[in-house]
Length: 338
Image 1 (cartoon, rainbow, N blue to C red):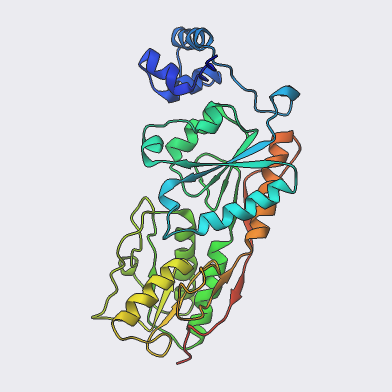
Image 2: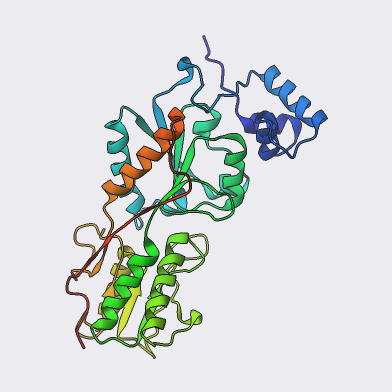
């Protein structure tokens, strides 16, 4: 006997030739949909057998799945950028210790652009969801309009007032840059795309504050991009005709790429040029230099995120808004004293 296919929001939208956003808002009784269209959508949903899952603590016990979804934009999840796989492992272990299983789903650029709800939500497979990695506000607004139990991790948004867990990127970058300056460096360049993620923009602002406080001039146009505005990796173009004494990289992966490029041109790190990273994460053998960086323990971030999402699922009280996880400066041998 064939098992009946579960109906998704996108199926209803396709039947009515409307957007998934409109369907989502109508079924969640949100503003922005006319009464006639709302009724039409609900009637079609009922006809197709779609069931709306409640997302608060008063949900019936037979609706509880024991699963928490982790949604990661696919552009951040590749062989060259595996930091989110690293974080996912810590999250999974932490959630399992609290009797929740993790379901990972990769969010494609196409689904994000077309505003397609995550399959794990459409198929009602999870009790809550953690979005790990920068996602645009329009897509987040779609999820918010239909689903309550989700939080952001490793990024935040100021527009939508969503709960989030992220590193204290601003202060940690400020601390790191101050250290490099204290070693005699006056000509520093930041490597990272300011507009691609909130973590990178905060790290740049911390860098900028340290530079200004130490009376060192810098210009926004001097930022060296390591990715495009969507966060996809691009070729890093180092200023070989006007080199700084130190590169302040937004993450360890970028620092490793910079070091490799420098060495290919005959530069030695740190003898000729200093390089710093952020995250204290590099796969073994990824860099020939022990990197000065910032360590923010992933297990700490995982615990904060688990507390937050589980409290939301259970309807228990919690502190709303941004939750910052502090880090520590790790001094190794990639910064030369001038």
